[in-house]
Image 1: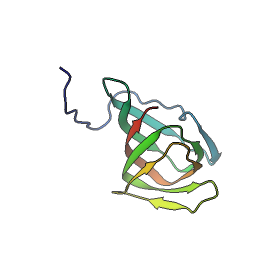
Image 2: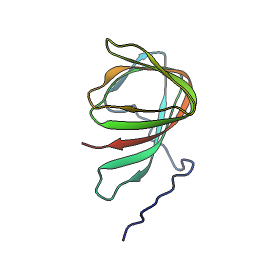
Image 3: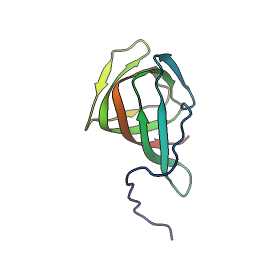
Amino acid sequence: MADTIVKLGAPTGEPITADLDGWRVVEGKPTMQTWVQHISADGSMLSGTWAATPGSWHATYTEYEFVHIIRGRITITPDGGAPVQVGPGDAFVVEPGFKGVWRIEEAVLKHFDIKRA
């Protein structure tokens, strides 16, 4: 039987440093690091930690994501929508179909959970 509780600690090992699928730089020279820390037994959920440096990406989402910001600040502006500012302690979701700009104002560290399609 698989573990029913998996505690995610600080990220370890080599991160993925390529930009996420559907993300393209639109301002500055931001970098990102992604640590996948858990994948559910059926592969439908992915959890981990993500870090990024200041700059902006235009992002297109095809999957649902829950986010909890640990440190840093981001302004997220949906195409044609109003900016949303998030910072330490904030939690939010991004629905599939989102398109818009993630502007990293201060270096960010976040936990994420993605429900795969």
